[in-house]
Image 1 (cartoon, rainbow, N blue to C red):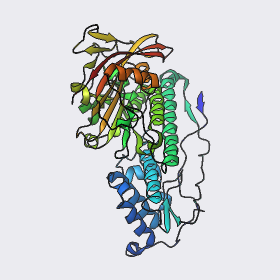
Image 2: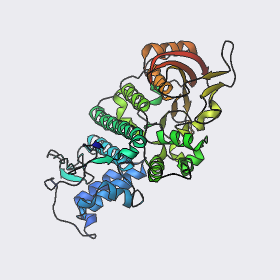
Image 3: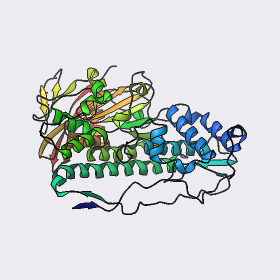
Image 4: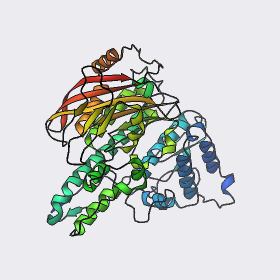
Amino acid sequence: MVELNHWIETINRLPSHSMSVSTQVPSIDDLQTDARWQLVQRVLSSAPFQKSNRLRDLLQYIAEQTLHGNAHELTEQHIGNALFHKPSDYSPIEDSSVRVHVRQLRLKLHEYFHEAGRDEPIILDIPKGSYAPVFRPATQKAVPAPVVVPPNAVVSVGASSRGAFIPWLLCGLLAVACGLLAFRGTDLRTANAAHPPAALAWPFSQIFDTAHQTIIVVADSNYGMSRILARQPGSLDQYLRGESLQVPIVAKAGPADSRLSDYISKSTLTSFADVSDVVGLYKMAGALQSQVSVRYPRDLRTRELDHNNYIFIGSPGSNPWVTLLQDKLNFHESESVVGKSAKVFLNVKPLPGEQPQYTGLQLTGTMGEDYATISLLPNATHDGSVLALQGLQQEGTEAAGRFLTDDENRRQLMKALAISVPNGSSQEIWFEALIRSRAVSGAPSSTALVAVRRIQP
């Protein structure tokens, strides 16, 4: 038997000893005159909440439930069902969207009470480990919620299905690591929120700024796996409808195969390469980490791309959102037979000395050369930027992030583009670069600039 003795997720509930301004539960008629509810309305109408209807709805719902005495019902499962319209049997362990939005809500509340609401007599916060807001006098320190670990929390995998599930167990651990990274990033953003932003190095000065949120969209490892199992290239339209995630089951499939297919369709996993890139990108954001958040590609919608900065990690085979950029780029990912042939970057218009195509590793985890592109483009409405890190395999994707966060590599890139951009410059320069990496044991050991293009949007 293979056992997991530690659960990362905890049972979230409002602690009985949390302090509040009043213990009286108001009626529906009295709610409008309740000072706590009036505070909630001021928060909802403030600038930090104007760009996110989802966060507004979330705060209003959990505040109303708490003031009506239903704080004990505000679990992750309940919020997912009632507010996010998740199916009744959805798994919060596999779907982190509620946790992600609550983390963002904590950040927005911190921003409000340190800026527009700094003179409020009442403070509203959401203790870590809880989904119910706590109201307290501004002079009173917050009381942290206790962590409650479910007893006898053990997951067992039978020996007969051990081989099928171990890879997904490892992927799950990577997903947990990514979640912890995002949680750590939230703490860093909170700590730096009061500090003025320092001048950022180019091209990060174009992707991180005070006027926009920067959304990092990681790759969907399950999408890549389902493409291979289905032997179909997939598309963004299919992905958004969930069609390309429906892995076909062979005629003699057993219960374990069915569970594996269901897990691939519903879970949210990313790769270690993406975790590595997110760490580097957060570091380069500096004091502007308060403007950065991480999203899973399945939770993104097209309408959201108009007025923010975005960073897409992964090629079309793992992050279908980058297909929206392909008509503006020179290097296009291609794959003859999905899952069986090595991916290549096609060089649409080769310059002298360049190859017509660049072939990467056939499988991630092997030794050899892999390729990646780094591209920076304006967003759909030209009021923000989109950075894309596309590797043919995970090694290439990680190499692209390493290349861009290295000072000397950025100087080489600027020289190749014939530009000179001082730190903090608002000058807009759009480009595409092809990167070669040498991979050993699943990780890039070196990177080199192969080709560049200036892009005229």
